Length: 45
Image (cartoon, rainbow, N blue to C red; front, top):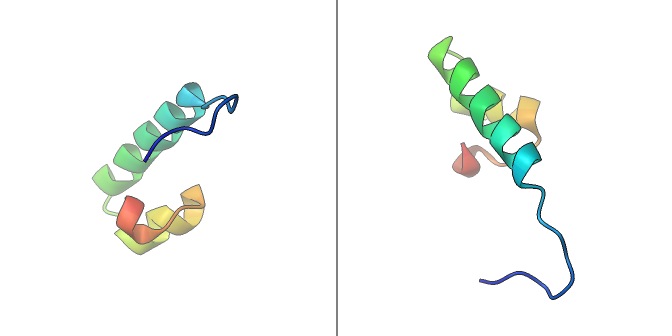
């Protein structure tokens, strides 16, 4: 699965969401709730 030519990836935004997800999980928030808050599927959490 590659990147479409000319499309920029937002790695800073991805890292911010990843760290926020880790923080929320560390607080005991369920995966489904973390996913909802981050706007991703729970399988991505």
